[in-house]
Image (cartoon, rainbow, N blue to C red; front, side, top):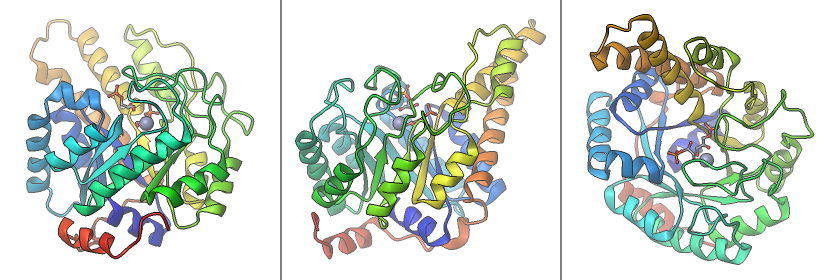
Length: 337
Ligand code: G3H
Ligand code: 13P
Ligand code: ZN
C-alpha cells in the first residue's frame, strides 16, 4: 500500500479503500477498477475476516489478482484491534495493516497516547520487516460498527494536531487515520455538515505539520440521498441522514488525504438493489437474480468514487515492488525519526 499511496501523493490524487466480506463485493471493486483503470485498496475488518473465514477471503483475493493482473491491488486489514490481529493478517498475506491503537483491544474504550504508540510501534516493526505497510490512528471516530468504535458523535475525540505529529515521529507509520468529526455507518450528521461538525481545518493543520504523512479519512461514505431513497422506496426504514460530501473529501485530497475509507455507501447500494428485486419480483428465488443487480449497484458507486477521488486512469503508473524489496527499503529507514 505504501507504493500506492506514494504514487497518489506524487500524482495529487486519493485512493478509495473499500470494505469487502464476500465474492460479489470483491468482484464489484475489481470491475470498477478495470472500467476506470484504477489502483485499488480492498480492505477487510475483523468482522469481515470472521464472516468470510480468512482462507476464503485470501483465495478470493488471489483470484482477483489472477483475473485482473493489470490492476495494482492492496489487501488491507481494516481496524486491527491488537498487534495479534495485525500479525495474523501479515502472516496470511495482507500487504497492509491498520493498527487501531486509538481504542483498547475491546474496540470500544479510548486508549492512552502511550498505549497507542506502544502497540503501533510494535506492529510497525513486524510489518516493515516483511515489507508490509502500516496505518495508525490518532483520535477516535464516533459511532459503533460491528462492535467497533468509541460511540458518541464524531466530535468527542477529534485529533489533536500536536499529538498527531508526536505519534508519527514515535511510531514510523506510513499512513495516519485522523478523527475530524466523522463516524462509521449511515448516521454521521443530522444536516449537511459544515465547519462546525466536520473539522477540515484540523485536517489542514495536521497536513501542515506532517506534509509527508499519508492521511486517511475514515467514515467517508457520502450517504447519498438517492441511495437512501431506493432502500426506503422498497420497504426499508432509514431515517434521514447526511454523510461526508464528496467536495469535502476532494478538499482533503488537496491537503494530504491519500486513502479514503468507504463501506456504508456500498452497503446501501447493495441493499437497495436487493430490496428492489425482492419487492418487484416476489416470485424470484434464485440468489443470482438479486446478487447480480446488487453487485452492479456496488460497482457503480465504486467507479464513481474512483473518478471523484482522482485515482481513475492511474492503474498503469506502477511497476509493483515485491514485498522483499519493500522490506529492504524500510530497513534503510530509521523508525522514530
Ligand atoms: O470499520 C468500519 C467498516 O465499515 C467495517 O465494518 O466491522 O461491520 O465489518 P464491520
Ligand atoms: P463508512 O461507514 O463511512 O463507509 O466508513 C468506513 C470506514 O471507515 C471503514 O474503516
Ligand atoms: Zn474506519
